[in-house]
Amino acid sequence: MTLDERLVARVDRAARKLGTSRSAFTRDALRDALARLATREKERRHRRGYEDRPVERSEFDDWSSEQAWPD
Image 1: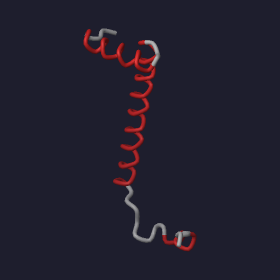
Image 2: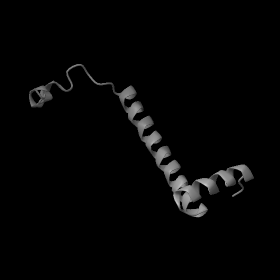
Image 3: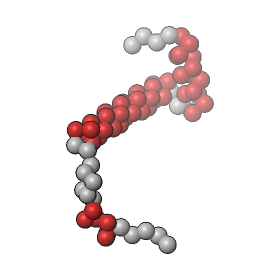
Image 4: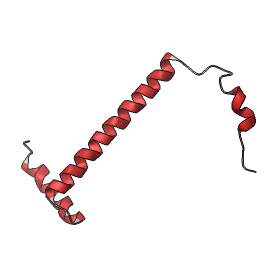
């Protein structure tokens, strides 16, 4: 993996500030990035599902009697 020097310097400063190593900081950043990608994909699939099969007007009417609204 090749990183430009300015990025490495910023990572080093951030890692020092957090009291961790460059490797640990990078591992965490990569895990976070992968989690964001997974969330984006789930959201895309969720939107696509509703585009392919929109909610029907009375689809949730059976549940209206189960709703409990605070006073």
